Each structure stands twice: as structure tokens, then as C-alpha cells.
Image (cartoon, rainbow, N blue to C red):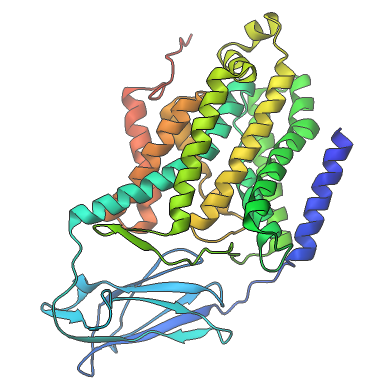
Amino acid sequence: MAAALFALFLVALGLFATATPASAAEDDPYRISGNVQLDGEPLEGVTLTVDGPGGLQEVETDENGQWRVGVPERGETYVVTLDEDTLPEGIAVVDPEDDTPNVKEVEVGQGGRVSVNFFIGEGERNVTSFFDQLVQRIIQGLSFGLMLALAAIGLSLVFGTTGISNFAHGEMVTFGAIAAFMLVGPASLALPWWLGYPVAVVLSALFGLFLDVILWRPLRRRRVGVVQLMIVSIGLSLALRYTFQLFIGGGTLQLPGSSESKISLFGSVQLSVIDMVSLAISIVVIVAFALWLTRSRTGKATRAISDNASLAAASGIDVDAVVRVVWVVAGALAGLAGILYAYYRPGIKWDMGAQILLLMFAAVVLGGLGTAYGALVGALIVGILVEVSSLWIPADLKYASALFILIVILLFRPQGILGRRERIG
């Protein structure tokens, strides 16, 4: 069994190597630049943001009204937004044919350079009320929280049944996204999405089983301590992360439909069809998982092992078999979360799972260690806080807000929201 799974893993890696060869990162980044002028005169200190592959960047115009940012990818779409609050009083970006003239989508072509200029004049600014912004952020946070919950539930299940703090869980998320790209991407097998994505989730489940068979089960049988297992998971995380980089390179890959336009729903709330489908899939999968955990025989055995593994074994439960199922479920949930996160970012990178690993642990600890429902509650809180906090703090610091609220809640409830108080000493 182990040999067959190992062969399957090598085949998957071979697919990665043939489908997308690694490319060395260039020293000189591609650039987006432009000018901001009022009646031919430069405006200094105007803030602009550039969002796309590589994350959100913020820049200000210089004394000549010019600005420039480096971006990691060409052939990709970026959104340039001029912050009208940084313009002089009574001045706005004017375009009678555009409702949001201060927001422009541009594509960095093969030349690696593109210019974005704004016409500034006297006019009325399009201002979105704080309430509308808050509603939009809450919905985005709910979408992010549900996606995060899929990954955090698997992480919590593994900890509850084995005691392993799996720092390689982020790489299981990355594996799902990469497998999806290799199956449906334009430069790969190009399967239809309705076939490729389920196959990617199945491969992620087999990847979780593969890791248990060749690594975690032998270590459990040798009764390796929890601290040693944690260190092994950190080493596995680093090994997998740089293996992914070796095969797909350091750039950003896009799944089909990632640049789909958004639809206005109500107020200022805008979601793309993929955003709405992601929300629906997350809810359906979480409900199905809850039913499996509470109604099925294996789910009840999983809860029994999480409560007391020794007592569960004495009651006749095959602990090894249940743990094997847990790794399969955790791998499948992580793989699905990776696909949804690739659309949320958007884009696939070799270290994308590691970027949200601390948020997964924050969700698990906040909800209560070892409880799947706690991981769900914690992930929803973390997701909403991350998005809503960006109304007051810089976008680069929004992840820190979730860790801050984690510390505050643990000061008053050390066992987490749904965790059980344990006796120490």
C-alpha cells in the first residue's frame, strides 16, 4: 500500500515538472507607472493602490505627480485605485462614462511596462458610506472565514485524534491548488472544471493518506513524543514548500475564471459568480461534514478518540483505521480550501498555504483545541475580523488583528470558545 501511494506521489510530481517548468525570478520587476495631474500641473502626495498577483501595494505620487510600482508577473491583470480622499478639496477623478473613474484595471503585457494616468478636475466624488463598506467587508470576511474553516477543521481533527500540531497543513492546502491547476489550467491537462476540481480534491485526500502511511503512522507506532512530531511537521513543511517552488517556480499561476468581473448585488456589495459559488460550496461541504461527524459510525468514533483515545481503543474502536480516515478527510478539506483560496487571493503561489497557516492555528486555538465545531466558529471570527479591520488599519496589518483578538479572548477563556477546561497539575 505504501509503495503504491509513493508511486502515485512521484507521478503527481512528474506531472508538475512536465506541465509547468520552473522559471527563475528576474532581478528587474515588471512595472506599472503613471501620472496624476490637475490642469497640466502635477499633484504630489496622492495615494494609489495596486492590487493583483503579489498582493496589495500602496504608493504616493512624487513632486512631479509621478508614481511607479514593481509587480511580479506580466500577462496578468492588476487593479489600480486612486484614493480620492488624498486629493485637494473639491477635486475628483472625472469621467462621465464611468461610475468609478478612480479605479482602473490594466494588464501588464509582454513588454513588462504599462502606464495608468488619471484625468483630474472639479467634480463630485463618488463616496461609499461607511455602512456600505462595512457590509461589503463582512460578506468578504464570511467568504474568507468559510474557506479558512475548511482547512482549520482538518487541522483540528488531526490534532484531536493524534495530538500532532501539523505545521505542514499549509502545504496540504497548496497541494490542492497546484493539483487543480495541473488538471484544469490552460498549460496542463485542460480538463473541464467540473471534472478537474473533484479529481484535485481526491488527489489531496490521497496525499493526506500518503503522508500518514509513510510518516505519521510509523512515528506513532514508535511512540514518538508530541514535541518531536511537531518538529518533524515543521521540517516536512519546509521540504514540501521548496519542492513546490522547484516544480512550479516562484511566479503566480491563475486558475480559469479568476479575473471574472463582479456583479452588483445590493448597496455597494459586489461578488463574482465564482465568489457566490465558493460560498455555496463551503456551506454545503461544512454541513455535510457536520452530518458525517455526528451521524456516521466513523464520525462518532472520531469524536470518541478525540475525547479519550485509550478508552476508545478499550471499547473496541480501531484507532489506526479511524486516524487513517481522519487524514484522508483532512487532506480533502485542505485541498478544497486551496482551490477556493486560489480564487480568493487570486492566484497560486508555492508558499500560499504558509501565508495563512498562522490564521488556521489561530482559528483552531480560538475555537478550542481538538474541536471541529470550535475550528468553524474560530475561522468565521478570524475571517470577518481580518476583512473588517482593514477599514481602520493598513491592509498589510489586517492579519495581525486576528492574532490580537486571539490573545484577548484567551486571556479571559484559555480553553477557547468551545473548548473544555482542563485540569493542570
